[in-house]
Length: 199
Image (tube, rainbow, N blue to C red; front, side):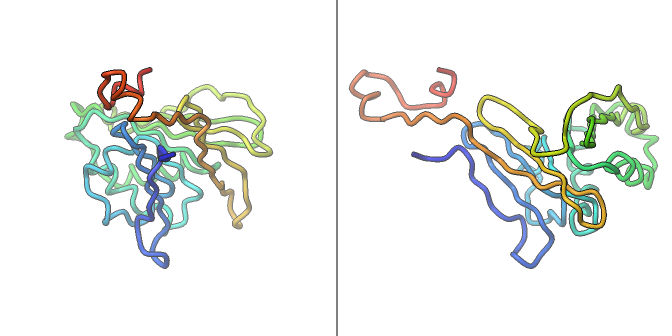
């Protein structure tokens, strides 16, 4: 059975943390932590719309700037999932630049902080010079292992840790997987292809 995920470290084992998970047959990827992401091509970065940030020490977050630079003008909606403090740190990074020429750019950054009793979402739109817009708190119990992203083809869970700052550890699961026998398809006169994921 071929897994749907193709994970690889962004850097060598002693470099900045980062795990890039390509989701086969979907033109999509997940990115766990945002350390130095120079080894990833712009195409690879653009495939990652969900980014899971364990905490914002420099070695886990310095790649944020390159991600934004690559995504500007591409019509992206980036979702950053992380611990309490993420919104303030995203806001701090974005305030470090002048955004007077991006009002026509359709980039949106959604930051979601997972607190023990709720999720605090916030949005940063390029058209508004990335001003922070906090949304209504979403109640929920995040004191133990909890789901962060649930889709038919994948499940990302998190658990809170203490790294002398709020921190999250993430797990990625494939809840459902079908193995297609190519020989049976050929016997039935059906082609192998991406149409199978729609079945």
